[in-house]
Length: 316
Image (cartoon, rainbow, N blue to C red; front, side, top):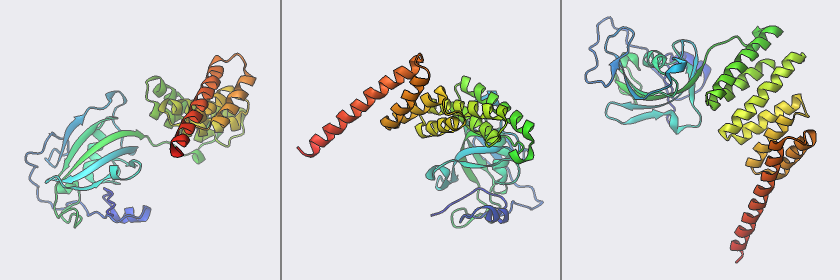
């Protein structure tokens, strides 16, 4: 199993996480290298030396700009040699590949190329060896002096901000409020995945705080995270966020409704009805709660009917 990470500084990489791939230092010769010939796209190298080309495959959302240096980006990539043979792909492993861009954690071609991308963009980066793994390459998968191609998809990024422990109480609340506001803007724009992550980040700054304004902010963030997760049809995430909201305010009708809805879609009908019944008791006039309780009953009946049909076929 070849686990490749496009890191430039292999000594630092070994210190931070174990993997079998290593990298070589960049080309350090003072001699000018020939520009890449017939590389698709345009030269986006900072020095315009013909060593890094970008070909746009799918346009991204220009409204949010490009990731700034130092931000943590989330990507998928497929790396190939010029003959088309694949040497690695993040799509072959669970989850995204995340790293800080522009600060030397990855090869030079990525540091420069990904900072030109937009959210949702897919492009192909063609990297001369000095923008990739240097003159030594990484045998046996990457030959010496190899020019490499990477198809990269950018899913998003997070800008660096102060950690919770670096902030006083007012700073924590201000940061949480700012992130919550960004989450609401993303939710209104239909970017439900971005909204969910922003709400979760916002909540992390006020979790465990005892001041009433912080608790109110935490409740709001968790409720909104649950709403975003429901839109994403991520039932487990919605249930978890609503549960955290209920830990702050056990009688919250919105939290009970959202957790009940998540549990219903997850097939836990008994727990769903318990939540929705509690929500209806707290607010008998809430039509959405009543409708959800009725839908839960219908879904439960349909599930039981399907189970009986399966059992009948098994023993017929």
